[in-house]
Image 1 (spheres, helix red, strand yellow):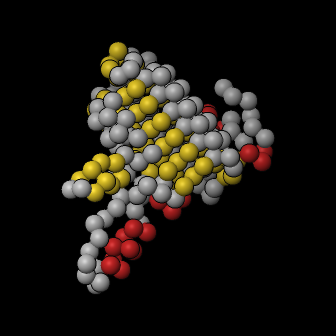
Image 2 (cartoon, rainbow, N blue to C red):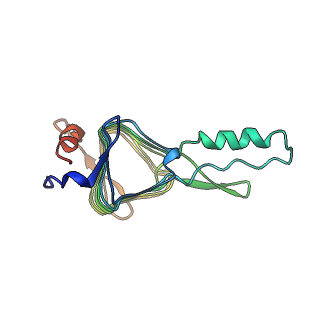
Amino acid sequence: MPPKQAKGEYIETETGNKVSRRSQIHGTQNIILAGRTVIQAEACIRGDLIRTLPSSSSSATEPSSSSSAKHNVAIAIGRYSFISTGAVLHPPGKLHRGVYSHHPLKIGDNVYVGPGCVIEAASIGNMVWIGKGAVVGNMAIIKDGVKVLEGAVVPAGMVVASGSVIGGRPGRVVGEVGIGWEGVDGREMWKNIG
């Protein structure tokens, strides 16, 4: 485990989230942290990449489309999740009818994202461990209790079944986590920060 950081390194929110002052968080109004989540230094969270709605020529509908954009969620992170140094969270996107649009990135509870990871998944379940330098491709879905090994590249659009171990480039199922594996203990990691 990393040594305790200096007191001034993290800002603690009302819900117990600990966010490094040196992290890069864009579009904070579009990011939801469920509570007791840790975001370490140099992590980059792109909440500014939100779903774009097609523009309407009618002036009567313009105010409603702008008010719905205010409540658009780009990234939602569950309780006791840990975003490591240098990790990048980027909402997935796709081209639909000639318009490139971003979709929400949903991360469950007790998820560990290792240093230097790039995450562009549609969904990551609960109790997931993603190793150092791993890449989770656009619109990938990772179910509960999955372990992604260091340096693995989960291809775009891949659906990873619960309890799988993913490794390699491109990523594939290389095993199962086993009966004794309890996943990530986010509470202990949260207690050791700041």
